[in-house]
Length: 256
Image (cartoon, rainbow, N blue to C red; front, side, top):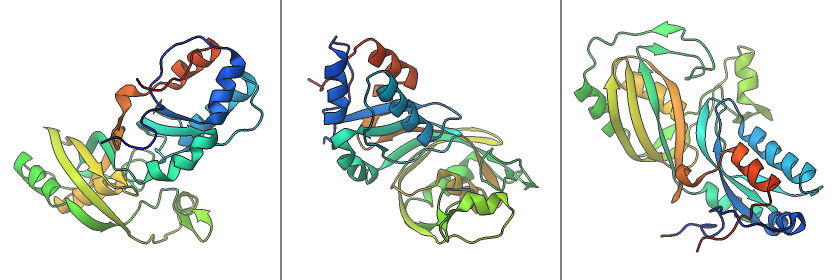
């Protein structure tokens, strides 16, 4: 089954004028980008805006992304330009697939490596069988509390601004759905996983909850988004590759 924008995103090199390339972005493009480690989703949008402004002379254009990735995560980011920004909300509704690694036996205030581990827990009782059983208990619809170190808004301010000031604030739970939760490797205390889930799911919260369910603690060490709906990161470009195409007149063409 195809998903919205499916025909727009594959990129091939076909020489064209800068004016034609600029117009194609204004008319609307759906780009699959592979977000690098350390970049915010906003950094990727700004990079593209800068390229379009300074390389193609587009002074004003709408650009949006379908689903934020944390700076410490890598992987698929769907970027819509021009008239295709109308499709952003449709892409946001699609399921997301992630791979990554949990570390058992410790927790951090941010649930990942943005902050240092501050509590340790026992792990001697944890077996591979227990880990796989625990993963199975997360399948289906459930309520999940987002991490305090997140971009969720509290009284008009991002939650992480409260967290970084040491304020103890509670966030409301979101209704989410875990479609698949597969344990792909166990090298205690590290656990590799693959998760397919609904929009609004925080994998950092899943890491924390997973540790608790094992009678221990856990935090998220690495995270990569590999798919959004049917769109796969293997079809995505790095920001550098996109820049190269724009500089050399590469055309973003429709899939045959």
